[in-house]
Amino acid sequence: MTNKRLLYHGSEWDFDLLRHIYDACEEIAVGELGLNTYPNQLEVITSEQMLDAYAAIGMPTMYRHWSFGKKFAREEMLYRKGAQSLAYELVINSNPCVNYIMEENTATMQTLVIAHAAFGHNHFFKNNQLFRQWTRADRVLDELSYAKKFLADCEQRYGLDAVEDLLDSAHALMQQSVDRYAPKRQSTSDKKQKAESRANYLESTFNDLYRTLPTSTDRLAKPLTATEEEAKQERNTLELPQENLLRFLARHAPKLKDWQREVLEIVRRLAQYFYPQRQTKLMNEGCATFTHYEIMNRLHDRGQIDQGAMLEFLHMHTAVVTQPSFDSKFYRGINPYALGFAMMRDIQRICNEPDEEDREWFPEIAGNGEAMQTIRQAWEEYRDESFVMQFLSPRLIRELRMFAVNNHSERPFVSISDIHDERGYRNIRQQLASEYDLSKQDPDIEVTDADLKGSRRLVLTHRVHSGRQLNKEQCKRTLRHVANLWGYRVRMLETDPETGITLDEYEAMPMP
Image (cartoon, rainbow, N blue to C red; front, side, top):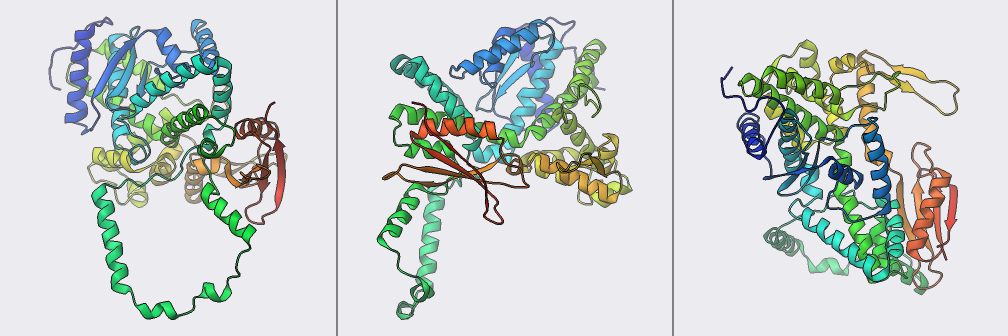
C-alpha cells in the first residue's frame, strides 16, 4: 500500500477538493490503467437540472419538445416519491467531454462519478471504433447549440404548433433514419493518391482492340423503352432503395419548406449520434463501471480514501451491478452494468489466472498477463454483439446462471433448450449476442419507390425476418407521420424476402 494523504474526510466537498479528486483519479486512469481521454469539462448542476437533462434524452442543451416536458413531470414525480433515484452523472460524447455532476452528491459519489464518466465513458467514446467512425466529437456541442437556436427561431417565426407537429413526425421515424454503414473518411491526399493509382492501373491494362469486341450486354440486353428509361433515371436520382427515411424525406418530399427540411436533418443527425451508443450499451457501461471500480480500489490501496468512503462506494457499486433473477418481480432483463462489469472482470481473470477451461476456450489471451491491454483492445474494436460472441466464458455463464428458452408462438408452452454443457455454452452465447444485434432488432424498412411527377406515390417495403411482422396499430400510426411529411398517399408493403410474397400492406393519407 502506498501511503498518501487522504483526499477528504466525511461527505462535504468544494471546488478545490473536486480538483484534487480529479487529479488523483487522472493519475491512476492515465498512469496505471493506460486510458486515453478527451479533455474533461466538469459542470455541477442541481437535481432539478439533472431531471431536466435526463428528460431531454440526456442532452442538457437539447431543443424544446412537449415529450421532454411530459417525461420530466413523470421522472420528477417518481423521484420526489422515492420510487426512483436519479442518475448521478450525465456525460456527452464531445471534445472536450462534458460531465454533469450533481451538487447533492457526497465527496465519495463525486469521486465515483468522475472515475466512471470523466475517465471510463470518456475513454470509450474516444477510442471505440464505432464512435470514431460515426460521430464527430468536436462538432457535437456546436450542433446541439445550433439545433436549439434554429428550433427556437422556427417557433417564433412559424408558430409553436407547426414546429411541434413536425418534430412529432420526425421523432417517430428516428429509428429508421440512420446510416448503418459508416462513411469512409479519406484525406485529400489519400483521395488523390487513390485516383492516380486507379488511372495508372487502367492505363497499364488498356488495349484499344478490346473496344471492337461485342459485350455480353450488347448481345443480351434489350433496349429500354422511353418510359422505362425515365423511371430508371428517376430511381437513380432518388437513390432508391433508401433506408434513411428522414434523409429521403428531407431531400425529396414535395411539399416541405426549407426550414422543415432543415429540422428533419437536425433530427436525423441526432439519431445518428445515438446509433453507436445503441450498439455499445453493454460495453460502454461495462467500461465505465470497471474503470470506477479499479480507480476507487486503487485510491483506497494508496490511502487516499478511508474505510468509510470505501464502504459508501461499495454500497453504491453493488446497487449498480445488481442483477435480479429471472423470476424476481424486479427483473427487467439483463442489466448492462452487471453483465458488462462481470465480463471485464472475467477477462482480467482469464489473462492473469486462467484454468484449463479458459485455455481451451480463449487460447489467445489465457495467461498472457496483459489484462489491461487486452481489455483496452476489446473496448476499441468490438460492439456488444461481437464482444459477447468473443468473450462470454462458460464460467461466467455458470456464475450468472444463464440458460436459453425456446418460445414458439404456435406452442402453448416454453421449453429450456440449452443448459450448462458444451453445446449449451455456445448456443447461449450466440443467442445472447443476437439480442444485441440491431439488424435483427430493428425492422428492415426501405423506401423502394417514389413518383415525383405523376401520382406522387411513395412506397415503403418492410422485409420480414424470422416471421416478425410489424404491430398493426403502431405501423398505421407511424405511417401517418410519413404521410404527413411526404404530403401525399404512402403505401407500406410487408414482404417475405425469400419468396417475395406480400404478407400485408398498409396505406396512409396525410392529415388535412
